[in-house]
Image (tube, rainbow, N blue to C red; front, side):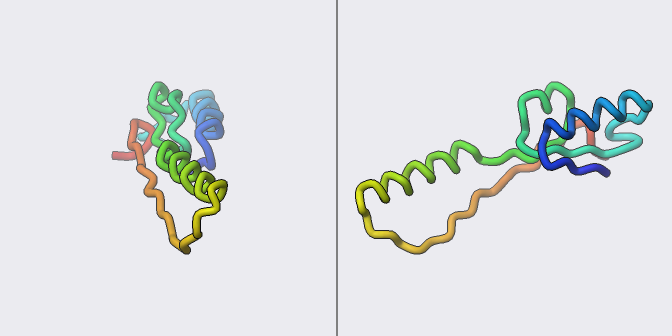
Length: 90
């Protein structure tokens, strides 16, 4: 199994596996990170980050800083999602 740090690296790995005749999801498992739209087209499993939620939270935090609102210590957790496609074993 190959886990890439981003989907662009996974695309490169897929190209190599295609060139040497290895079949994704059968001979080798491949996973990327970021869930680039191309991953869906290529059938590559990827980790999807909640980018909209992160951006909205950062905006709210920055707005609070600009408005000199009191800071409360807090922990914010964003849950990623594993989007399973054909590149991983079933």
